[in-house]
Structure formats: structure tokens, C-alpha cells
Image (cartoon, rainbow, N blue to C red):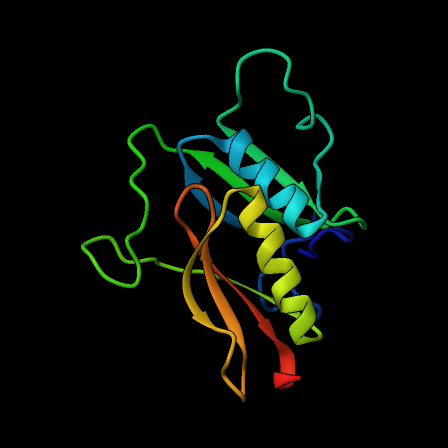
Length: 150
């Protein structure tokens, strides 16, 4: 059977591997966390997910400008934030974001902080790969770093 074409396809370019559809983050408040990443990364809601009318949804999806899915947010009623880098709840994965310059590194750190993130680790003085590890409002770590240490 030939897989369907287009964004609904579940087969890779050669038809022999799955396509990464989206990354899903567990959280207590899908709308709140989706809003954080929507603004931080310049994403948009999947059609039908943008409305806040009615009860808060337990599942939301954010897409890139071309409509490709990027992140989804799943409500977990008893959600407990990761305690990375220490503690008894390590992060199981994290998101890496990249910026072109040190000036942009600090600008985007400040944007993330204004949106509710917190700094977990500051390696902005690293000559090879300056970066900040931040935690989103639900505690998930994510990195902002300068590609190539520029």
C-alpha cells in the first residue's frame, strides 16, 4: 500500500521511515504553555485550537507558518515539573533553539524571561557554544544557543 501524500503522510521520503509529526509536552495548563511557545517561537494554533471560548482543552497543537505541526500540549492532571539538572524528576527531553549572534542570544533570553521562563544554566560566556538553558512555565528545560559560537 502506498502511503498518502502531503502533510498527512506517515512515511518518510523513501517511504521506509516515519515522519516526525510533532513534539508533545505534558503540562497542567495546555493553553498557558501553548501561549508561551506560540509567542516565543512565532508559531500559530492549528485551525480550531486558537479559540479560548468554552472549557480549556486538554490537547492543543501549534504549527509553523507553512502549516507543519511543531509542538503539542497534553494536559496531565497530576503533572509534576522536571527537576533537571538534579532531583528525582529528570527531563526526558528538551528543545534546542538557535540564534545567529550573541546579541540575539541575550535578546531571546530576555524575551523568554518576560514570557515566564526562568534561567536554569548560564553558559553565555562559553567561547565554543554560548547558550542559556531555560525552563518554560511548566518546568520543561529548553536551550537557546548561538550556532557556531558567533
